Length: 89
Image (cartoon, rainbow, N blue to C red):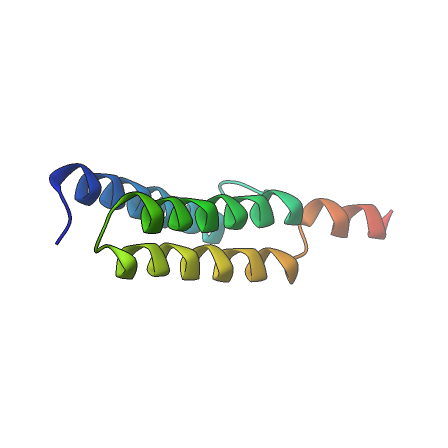
């Protein structure tokens, strides 16, 4: 089990990712595919840092890496509304 700082960091990151996906699904924000891919890369790097910095927290680091990977793949296959509007014109 991780320390209090690790647990609170994980909870804050998961809340941030959940808010991002909720705003994305409710069309409050419209990021480009590149921005979503960059968020995925940042989450993967955060998972690597958790793996290396906290001993015995390989499950947490792997989970963040997996969330980052899924976010990056989601960004790869996503078309923003801006590109659809440009194609229509």
